[in-house]
Image 1: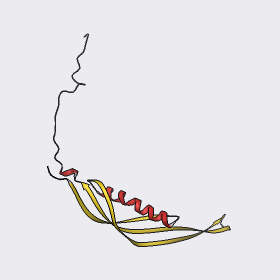
Image 2: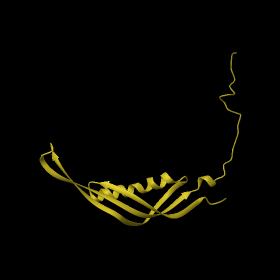
Image 3: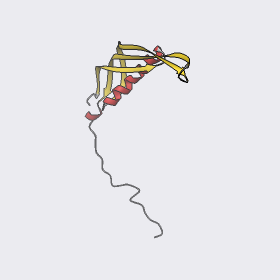
Image 4: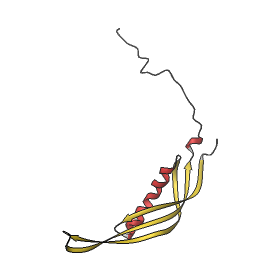
Length: 116
């Protein structure tokens, strides 16, 4: 039988945004699996990150006021863009030969009526 497991390395770019640096990185890392599975027709069962490169990292300061004039404050948020090299192992579902079986012995269609 043919081995249907294949492996390859891929580069993907993911973004994350949050109120803290740690959450921004965590949001970006959590998007790796979703990003890979959305583009893939095969069944991915192992994703192993090899390297992370920070392409863009921003600290955004927004000044806001209560009722447009009172109590000014500055809110900080962070945005990060990562380029990730991942090693992906997947099953090629399309290469698996499928055997067709046709049956006519369906119990729903072959009922024996009693008392008729």
